[in-house]
Image (cartoon, rainbow, N blue to C red; front, side, top):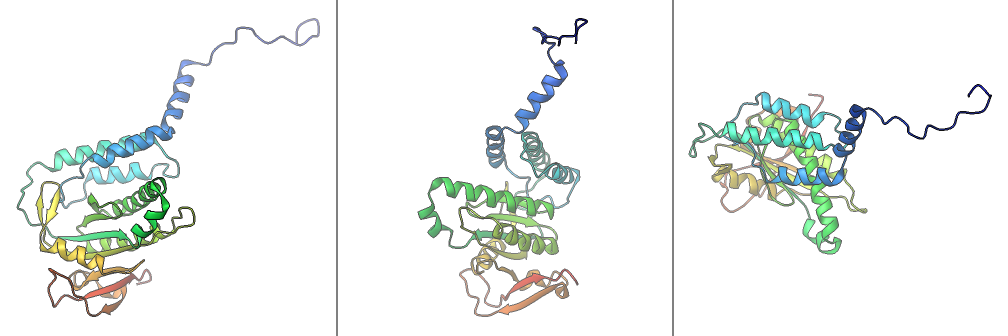
Length: 270
């Protein structure tokens, strides 16, 4: 209001917001940009995980979990960049001193989607890619929360390693639940998982050996929403922590005849 009682006219040359405010606004928009987030996630998918012969969960693993959990309810390019940086650093630093023929004591996890191919034929590429992206994100988050390391993505599943068999069982069970909660245009994917404990040999970023084959066969015998573990894995944990039943007639190529598998469910009250 001026001295004559009339309203002040708008300033024809308003003062621009401070540079710091404009920079903060630009950074916020860039951080939430969906195209940039998808691009960074694609790059992360091309980066190798740390060599699986490194069994200790070190500071970089804890840092990765902190980054992944920071404002996880919102997509963030900054968070994806941070995870990519940690992933690349782990791969470079952990490879030092790594022997290609070193046997490692780990529990091996395989997962895959049941009846996925049948649905995919009718769903179309866009829906298939959307489903796989959401399944991979959900599975990866659970595995990392339980100190697991993804060795490779298998399309509609993953192969991962754990130094603690109890954590492996928890991760597999929670991954099945996380995936079953997803819905893509009315379709609810069903994950199955299998675990076996052994001493595969590391070759570069991969692991090979009979125990890897056994773990894959155990997973392939599971039904929709089911977790199967070998008797070797069960003998590595406190069996009273799990509800289990023996699965008979388990036969698979390359698997010892005496191997027994169990369908297990963690008992969280134990």
